[in-house]
Length: 545
Image (cartoon, rainbow, N blue to C red; front, top):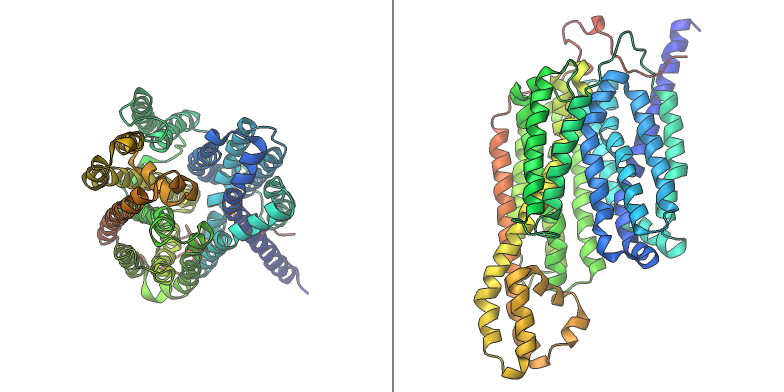
């Protein structure tokens, strides 16, 4: 057998090893978020710190979101292999630390470190896929990878529940170690390291100013209206710091030799359009994920477990649409597929606005399935389009930008839609519940004062009695029977308002899609010239012997 034949066989073998490693890494990274959520009650029961529980999620969100664009740029500068393996090692080391945490403060710190590793891992699989395959091949593989992410979201709660019940919550983190080691070995064998031929200029000033801007913005959006009032000095100060950080980042990037996020990308209509689509789509997606279980538990009256299963059809249809979309996008075209997906998401959100007190779990499940179809058509296609348009040297940063803007969109969506619900519920409860309370006898004054205080400060807290049987027992039955229909109606109308606002965002996203230039998928690798494919070397390829 000739040397060339041996080389081809070796490359094919290493490519298969690499794909296995990518699949394992993506799966256990996506799995981590869902199984940790399932273990939260056990973690709090063991370590205490109930008031700090939300920081387990916030810490991971802050670091992972901020690191994504940095990881993309480092992948372009240093090569995929070293950056990817570094992310895997950080993630595994932090997982081990999480398992040995002695208190909630330690666990929050370790989750933040884990988020750094997760933020590196999130975009790397898509970047490597962009390196290895032609446009047509990437369409298929990114659909499959989108399906893997969805599958992890579906089975994560079940796996997390089994681990917590059968072993210990610490194994929610320890399980990352053997799986991560296997993924690291496969990726190390399959990816070829990049040899640097000259000096590398790290954009330290860009990293610092971006971290200041993004972390301040995410903290303001996460804490505003929850830990602090929106008009408090803490939140206003964070927003001011975010503006200063972002403006400084733009100034620094315009002068940097190797900018972290080149400003010229924002002059490219395709780059801006695709990331805006991802931003608006994620707002709508979070609207459904956050508030539909709220609707089902509070109004329809299903259990927390049953309401959680309503998410499953959304993930299943998302998997199906991702895989099918990856097969047909080459024939249909990127722009028509994204437009179709956005309108399917809009249809799903509109259907959610028709849910009422008589809606069944089956109906809600079908409506969520419709949304999943739309998301599956859009999400992987955005990354595919970005990789088809931009040069090889910018593949890392444009791929990671897609994840970055979607993460920002998710945080923004959770904040805006939560504020919409709080505002609408406050108005409705003042108009409908307060008159009822005013008619109650004098002996009910403490109860009346308590509810009026909640309505004037945190209206959403009134709805907690719909999920808490013990709270209902504290209210005399005749009063409770009069209050419940009013509170349920207020919750239903508030959630309808949330879904309509989400629908508005997705319509804006669909409108933005109309400005997307036609993008033709080719049988060339990302960043190579269609007419002289053989003249330009792809920097990241499967290792040779």
